[in-house]
Amino acid sequence: MLNIGDEFRHKFSYTQQDVNDYARISGDTNPLHIDPQAGKESMFGRNIIHGFLGASVFTKIFGSLWYADGHVYLSQSIKWLKPMFTDQEYEAVIRVKEIFPEKNRVLYECAVYDVASGDQTIAAEAMLMNKKQYVW
Image (cartoon, rainbow, N blue to C red; front, side, top):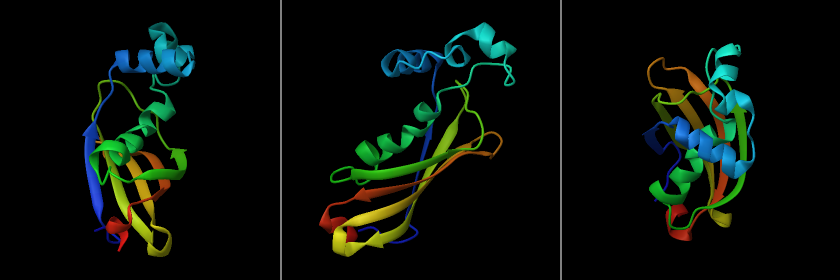
């Protein structure tokens, strides 16, 4: 059963192949993500991963890792605070912010942190519908 303040953490990283695959699937082939020379010449000094690829960790968590049976996305707000890079470890933190038992809905705070620096890279909220048994 979910309670306000419950938290789930998941460490992850992406490879350049993951970024290339995402570029191919999404159609976002911005050189900043896939061209090493463009990345090197950018303000970041190297390629950055797609913002939505970085935030896709939330769908992984809700879809297959934490109370996955019954989660249905209703909305997601996202703020990208810092760039994310390949082959770097990150940690996603999901926290129950509010529960609406009459509608079987849960509002989650979603965040991603760079493990090495502790910097937050993504700040977000997600509203999901849950199976009744999880929100009573």
